[in-house]
Length: 163
Length: 404
Image (cartoon, rainbow over all chains, first blue to last red):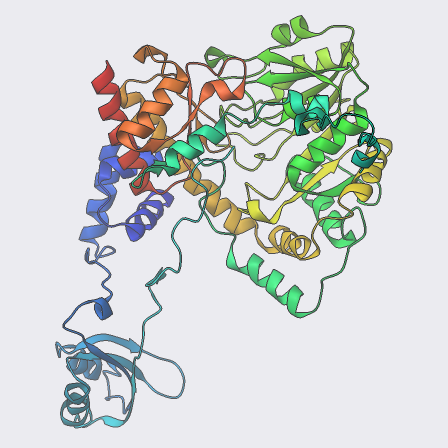
């Protein structure tokens, strides 16, 4: 990946609503070049989606999120791919990572209540044939996600005008 | 305190002197900074976006703060040696050599100070005899003239101009020199103009300095914040090292303004004299802040470059934005200020800045407070978030449109 694309990604990562025009100014590049770069990255699925980062704890309709360590038996010929897919296709599942270490998949599951998540684990996840074991950890509070701190303690603390 | 000796005896009528009679003439002579008024104006409104801040919008990187916390836990709460810890002086020497090609002996030629400001004060106090003239290229940072006055010197402004991108010109400098001229204060990259000096720009200045046997105080606090070309230290110019006091610090590049750590480097005799004043006035710079500064130099370069890149992006945004509004703006190549001309609006700097904050809620500093050549300009700091900058530019655009 060229350096310009990388810088475009960094600027979009900070704020996905930045226009190609603004990014072009900030990087001192022609606007068409930036538009082209963004289009290419969208096509190549480097940029997968533009979605807001939401602090759901501020929303009335609160959600319960759990991280689940899942141990599985890999399938002959397909390894973890098939089973990972069977898991991530559930809409309740928000994230699936293949992990090194003591377990195989780390699965993030979201539900409206503790019970809903628990029942998803017992009825959907654990019952899959190749799943050997699950360990469920409920998330109590999110401090930071994808490099973004959810509750910045203080805003700009500088004096308004200084020499 | 000698007030008691002035107390009239009981037989005399008691005529008390007013407090101002006690004040030293030189302290009375200096005026309060014109920036203060704009601080009050900005504070009187709620929704103000400020382009008036002379410091980074980044908080000091966490690893630097963490090093300070660890030093406190380890009980590093004592004085350090007057000149600063040997570790920090060593690291500063290494850094200056690596980054700007100037070699100083940490044992005799480097002094750690309470911010770059103290270093400038020490240098002036160590050098000035009453009546000496100190040449100050302007528009300039607001402290040089008052500190000069306090030391009994006479500050002489040397104007720089937008059409030269606020670079100091040898002929203007020469024209300001008299037999009393002793010190030249250089401050590039420049606050407030964003002007820089390249090797080629320095050559004729170095010649004038040599011809007139001047001592130079080179305030290079913004050295790391140059865009497009690497900073050239005046001390690195041929023959200039021994007659230059290089002043710098951690405030701007490492986002460490509140820590108050700066340094001065120069001829051992001069640094020795400054050290003498320093040890009687402040003893030493804060121990824990020195630990933090050492951490910044040791492990903070990558983070520093990241911040610099971010200023550069915002610099382009602001310069284009100001020009789109219809204000002339020279290309600032250093620090984090744009210094557009507002002369085309027909308002003075003060009027423009005052109405801008009162009617549109954008605070910026009028150019006239920075001395000669500042009138007709506005200092706009771009060390503020992109969202805020865009909003500030929109509001400024509306204001300029309204008054044209």
